[in-house]
Length: 182
Image (cartoon, helix red, strand yellow):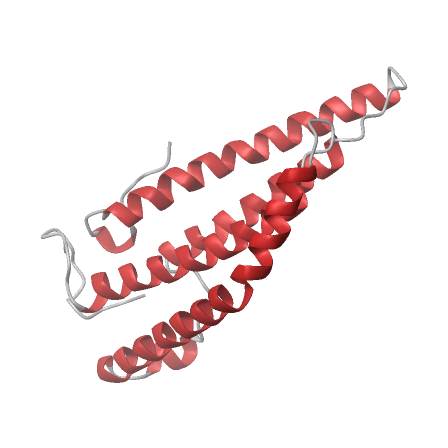
C-alpha cells in the first residue's frame, strides 16, 4: 500500500486518501493486464487457441490506469507546469498563476462535462443494452470514465489550491512556509 501522506508533509485530506486508494487499485490493474496477456501468449503459442477478449480487456485496463495516473499526478503536484517561470516569480504572482490555472481547469471541466454528457449517456446506455458476456462493452465505458476523471482532476486541483494557499489542514511539522508550493 502506498504512503497516504501527500507531498510537503501536510495531513491527508479525504480527497488525498481517495486518490491514494484508487491509484493503489490502478497498480493492481497493471498486474491483471500483464497476467491476462501472459495467459494469451500461453494460449496462442502453446495451445494454439487464441482468445478474442484479451486485447480489448488489456486496452481497457491500460486506459483506466492512465486516467487514474493523471489524477494521481495532479494530487502529487507532478503535472506539467512551467517551473522556470513559476519559481522565478514572487509568491503573489505564483498565487495569481495558481488562480489562473484553477480557473482554466474549472472552465475546461465544465465545458467538457456539459458538452459531452448527453452523447456519453446515449453511447453508454446503448452499449449496456447490446453488450453480451462474450463481448463486453469496454469502449463505451471509457467515455464516462474520462468525464469522471476530468471532474476528479478538478476536485484534486481545488483540494491542492486550498491546501497550498488557504492553509487547510496544514501539519504543524511542515518546514515549508504557508504560501510555498512546489
